[in-house]
Structure formats: structure tokens, C-alpha cells
Length: 283
Ligand SMILES: [Zn+2]
Image (cartoon, rainbow, N blue to C red):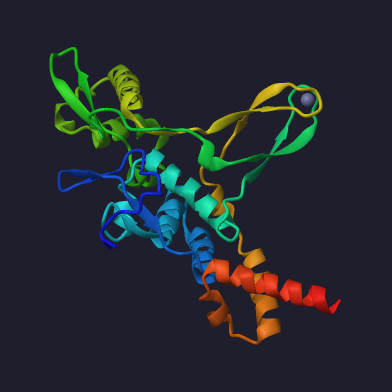
């Protein structure tokens, strides 16, 4: 077996990292242990904001990103869709039950009859829009005859965006995304607004994207309506179930917390099954 071969069962990043003049879309998570699950929850709690939490969590969960170790600055250099894509993959990874992917349960309230209902959604079946030509750059011909290039925003931009004063955000982002910011004619507020609209449209045309909304039909009255999907649902993953499992295994086998947390998740779940079976036999 060739150890350098990329695993083929993982879908590639919709955008990917461009480093050393090469675009790479491969990635892999660490095998899931209780220790990693706890570390992810702690990284989420310690983060200042959502972009920071996404960078911290993915840096820990990933074993490899675009052929290299997933240092936080490389995770922060991923475009928005890639970060959402990996967080959705992580949500599925965290919910895997003994190797079988389990559907996510979503809740909705019908806008017509107000009925509350839950429905299951297999995130792996949702389509992904891949990056357009020129990624991560979009070209824009200005009225002055100059063609300028702008890049897609990445995680680091989102983190810093939150700390910009509201009235300067548009100009700040344009300068940051432009390949040659000094050539941008942004003297007048109206120019800033016009450039922002054109750059946004040009970037949208090449941006990879995930499905962030699905249609659901109300089981009571049949009314179809849109339900938003949170791409960062994995940030809400709490280790309560894990701690209960640690407690049960420690109680039964007298292993230390560190030993139990080091177990690969499938083995931990298998031991819990064995405890259940033994109890069934003795009942
Ligand atoms: Zn209804």
C-alpha cells in the first residue's frame, strides 16, 4: 500500500488552499477519541468569536490539510465555504455511530399551522458548489480600463472584520481583498458602495458554496417552507454524553479517565454495548 496516496473516500474541499503555486483540496481528520472530543469542546469555549472557534476546532480535528499539518494560520487561510464544508464534515464525524453515518435531526415550526416538528437530514447527500475558474481570484474590469483582481475572503478576514468600525467595513474589506489596493479609487463614499457591489458579484461568481437551506413539508398541513441549516452546528456539540460514557466505563472496568479518553470512539462504543449485553443477560 502506498502511504502517500490520498484517501479516495473523502470528498475534496470545494475550494482548497493555494500554496507554493499549487491548489490542493485534500484533507483528513484525526481518528475520534474522547480526548479529542473534549479538546474540541474546550477550544470552542475558549474562543472569542465564531471565526476563532472554527479555526481552533478545525486545527485540532484535522490531521492533515492540503498535504501539510493543519497549523491555525493555514486553517484561517481557508475560504468561507471550505471552513463551512469541514465543519459540516466534522458534525458528521462526531455523530458517527460505530462507523455508520447517522442523519442529523433538525427542528422546524410550520409558518402556516404553527405545528412543531422534527425531521432527519443526511448532510452527506447535500450538493456542494465547487469553485469557479480563477479561484481564489475574481477579475474585474474598471471603468478606467484597468483590470483588477480581488480574492475570496478567508477565515482570517472574518476574524478581523468583526473588529472594524461599522462605517469603514466596506472600504477596509475592499482594500484587504484587492491584489493592488493602492490602485483602487475609493475617495468618495459612493465609489466605495459601487465597488463593493461589483466586487461582491464577481466573487460570488467564483465562490464555492454549500447548501445552507432546505425545503421541508409540514407533516400536519403539508405546507412547504425553507429551513436554515447552521454550517457550524459542530460548535454546539457538548461532551455530556461522552462524560456519561466515561463514568459508565470507569464504574464497570475501573479504568482511569485518561485510559478511557484515549480509546478510539468505535472501541469505546463497543465496550458500552458489551456492558449493556452483560446487563441484559444477568437481568
Ligand atoms: Zn403546517
